[in-house]
Amino acid sequence: MYTSVDFVAAEGEEAPDLTSEAAVLMDTQSGAILFGKNEEARMYPASLTKIATAIYAIETGDLDEIVVVSKEIENIDGTRVYLNPGEQVPLRKLVQGMLINSGNDAALAIAMHLDGSLERYSKNINEFLETNTGVEDTHFVNPHGLFDENHYTTAKDLGTILNYAMNNSDFREIFGTKELEWDGESWDTTLLSHHRMLIGEIPYDAVTGGKTGFVDQSKQTLATTADNGMLKLTAILLKSDYKRKIYEDTVKLFDYGFASFKSSRIKSGETFVSGKLKFKASEDLLLTEPIENGKRVVDKEGNLKIEDKDGDIIQSIELKPLIEKKPEVKKEEPPKPDQSGLLSVNTLLGALVLVAAAGVWAINRKQKKNRRFRSR
Image (cartoon, rainbow, N blue to C red):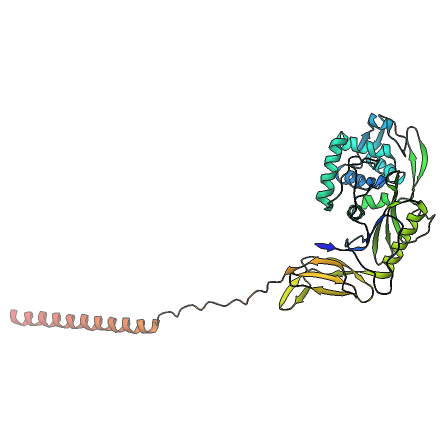
């Protein structure tokens, strides 16, 4: 229903200068892109892949189902939650271990449980993402994000995937979890989110969830959501040389977004005019508008465009043509024949018949009388 384009700085706000190679700031609800830097460039996501694996598992699996951990997890590289082959773990717990502690073994156990092989997992998750989120330049070959040159996405696609996932309450809860007691066969501990803004090491009150990532080829990657009570934002940062810098970039994006934009709502049926043409919203719609000097413009094709003071488009929404009903013209029935005329004719004919009958009766009576006199 909406189309978004890159945004040029709002009134009174400077677009942030970022060190990360690629970035996007989006309205979590409307999907409008509020800032982009190389947001359509192909990049390696590292563990941000697990955002996609999580929503795929939540929506295609049963979180209460018991998963028997496959033997394929034995030789997995990177961060783990130290699962044992054959260990029985609820799917929900695996998703938690994957998102909170970034467990690569948990991610692989999920993929093997859902699809039986990495090849089938790759086919199914790519179809799932394309169908449900509409991403156009994402291809995943594994559930954890360990490097593969055929495993790629873009900042824009990752933001779109995360926005989709944030509509799911189970995902939101796990994505926003700061710590979790972990009781496994070989590892008892308290899992602590790796996201420093989420756990308060880098204070930012509006932060609601986050995921970190790193492999040598992708460098630092970071996904974060925030909500200040008036606007919900999604920030994706890719390929930063330093962990400190990627958090600084995220803070800059959120400061910029909250200072520059607001969320508005259009109700279903609300009408808009472009010249002599009328259009309407066919459903309730969310808009992202500049706090100052924004305007709404409707073109002759029925696109509602949200513009800043310079005419740069923040968001474009397709409206439906308003077809006004013509007033009904009542068909007049043809006049019925004059019944009174027919009645008078029938009455006259009836009278003539009676007169004729009376005349015949009188003649017959007279003839009978004459016969009686002659017989005397």
